[in-house]
Length: 336
Ligand code: AQP
Image (cartoon, rainbow, N blue to C red; front, side, top):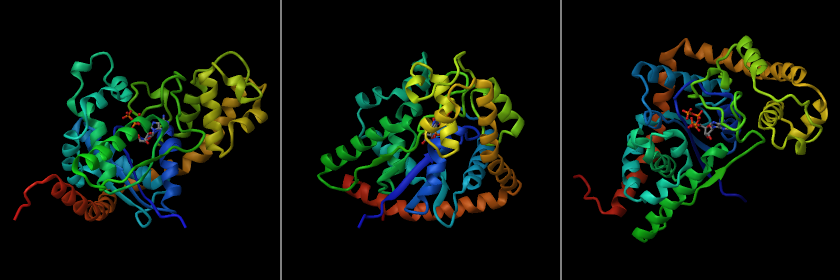
């Protein structure tokens, strides 16, 4: 008999979720909610590590909630909530700032990517972001974390924090975390550059498919997607050194629930023009019902807010005893 594991994952309301977020994360979350106790969090405290205009942050948070529900998350099956609604995340995040070592944070490649050349100008929040992410997970003693491949290093750091905490205080309190990196599309790449991941905050809208893109926008972006002059190969070995071709084949495989080798068996030898048309068709068939549900949900913001309120109450009830015990272990004087 397997012991049921508590699942936690988060997504930043830093834009409309992309096809990358969907194939790399959200779609797996929907499947997991039937098998595990799941918490899914709209991590707005992470989003503000880069400036978000206030009105936009509110709109994007609701948009994210609508997108997650439209993709199939159900408030009856999982706990869906907004990170800032449960202040215990920030509290445990601070405690973990005091456990994590600067040397560990210096190795985080996502910080280097996101801070770019002018590291001195990045926010301190962006630098300690992985500590808050560790807190998000460990606040619930979650042990299974479905993420895209890009988050693997942050989960290793979360495990380092848990281990150091347990070691320093001589306890076995925080459990080890296991990443769950699934599927052929664990990393969906930019449509403009096959070596860069697809991101909701990429300045180029052409680099990504947004979950609220209409059918014409999907067709346009796929038609414009960067490719190379060669036809598609017959097998995956032929994708070597062809990141854009690999990406489009990966997307086709993921969206049709198939394997890249089968996609290439069916399309090998074709030029990209014909393949892109079929890819557009598959994407439109899959994404247009999601977009329609999302737009319907956004027409009733009060109902969305109410669903998020219920989620926050449930999350907080799980989080507070774990935060209290953490503080007790660390020797904080309890408030009378
Ligand atoms: N391109 C991707 N392919 C596969 N998975 C992806 N994820 C993100 N991009 C891809 C997964 O989506 C989940 C939520 O991500 P996030 O919003 O917390 O942060 P992120 O990874 O930084 O995503 P973005 O879209 O790139 O956001 P911005 O542009 O704001 O930085 C994670 O599980 C992630 O792995």
